[in-house]
Image (cartoon, rainbow, N blue to C red; front, side):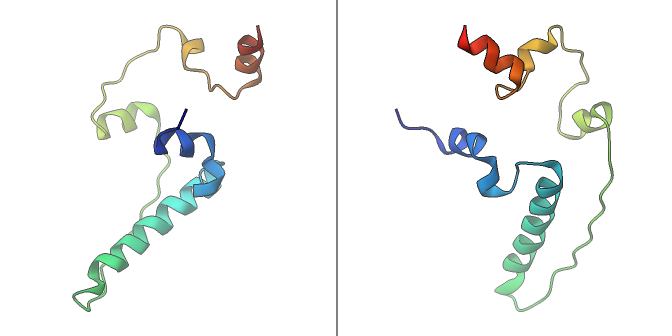
Length: 92
């Protein structure tokens, strides 16, 4: 069975630099700056790039991406499959 690109990269986060929070932040910022530079290359002008990094909580982040703030009823349903607990359950 062939995996979709999303499934492949979810399983291989290290390939795209998303296997830990530090690399994830670095990869995201680098990608945005590279995209800004690439998009202005054709007009021979440098982009105005401003980067602000701020740690925010879920209650502030969810409205920014269009999600309402809500509580999960069963947190165990959302456990990462790669956690030890999830691996134990999947073996049974």
